[in-house]
Image (cartoon, rainbow, N blue to C red; front, side, top):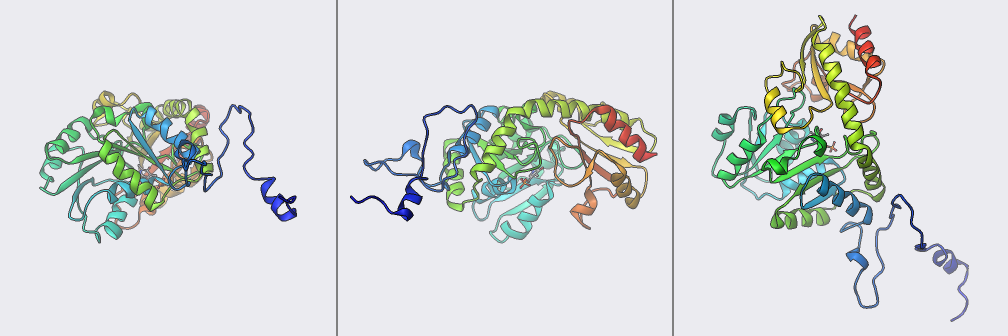
Length: 374
Ligand SMILES: *Cc1c(COP(=O)(O)O)cnc(C)c1O
């Protein structure tokens, strides 16, 4: 063969040059497609990155181990993971959702899945009788978010899973707020765990991601097929960021929780605060339930300010160390006026501020609230 010309050299001199090195950190596999071997096989079954990518596999295997599940599937966002669970149901199925569910999920049901003939009931998940009463012959799934958003209500995962299984329905737990550091829903009887890895797993407010963890083979096949065919998969770099986040997840959420508990205790005694919602406080109505199914109380809390909506929002903007932004779980503290984000029909009290506590020094965080409330 003749010597390759410039254009060909430019391609071939750069093409995959896997070097025989052992980097301590994982490289980012920015590949959409993988070379086939002469016998027709593919190394480690990597064919095309919608089906699988090494960075995605690393994240999936890690989260499966941390959640003590057999299978994990990573997605491009928490909502993509949640949509996949809903797509695994069939037309005519009925779902029971918490009445204070993450508001985008309710909107997804209304705007998209109702058209696909999935129906739903909204119930107070802290009331087991209400959950049982909502069961229909077509009920296929019960959804739990514990603690809930933004009032941090706790649902009894073991009991609700039992109610679901008695009626041949699945029990799904959104474990975003506690992570497997503090709660393992599969061990409590749930069939699937879903996460927005955008939050604590990523931990630095710079990446979106989601995942589903489960043990059942048939269910895993269904989820796997929707994942690769629908294509809401995470990019290799996003997986790399989540993987990096996982290494410090325990340290971050432990510190954040310690800070949240101290801040909640301070705020509870402040004369301008009407109420603090934090499961770690003895005043929380389900403090004991939280203690029995969680190993930590988490780093999210909400407060009711003794004032009007306008004042509550103003107080949030007066905080210097809490950025007024939505989302949660990052190393930096955030504060949010939920009602104005969720819109007019939101059942959230207008004087409620939701706080995601970061890893800053607790003395500074407390002093900040003191000045904002004065
Ligand atoms: C953020 C969040 C979601 C949605 O996840 P995205 O990554 O934003 O798509 C779902 N559930 C809970 C509890 C969340 O906090």
